[in-house]
Image 1: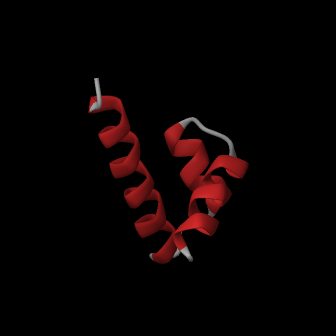
Image 2: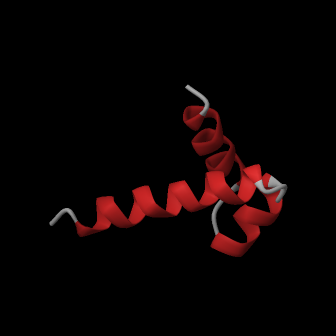
Length: 48
């Protein structure tokens, strides 16, 4: 039931880590098959 939520949280952590390592939001989005806006939202929320 909560497996999907845990997977998404882990994916989001990895996105933020990749962004901090210098990968662009566009590249992260392309690799994951999601929109750049979705990556940007996760990165923005992680800064709080």
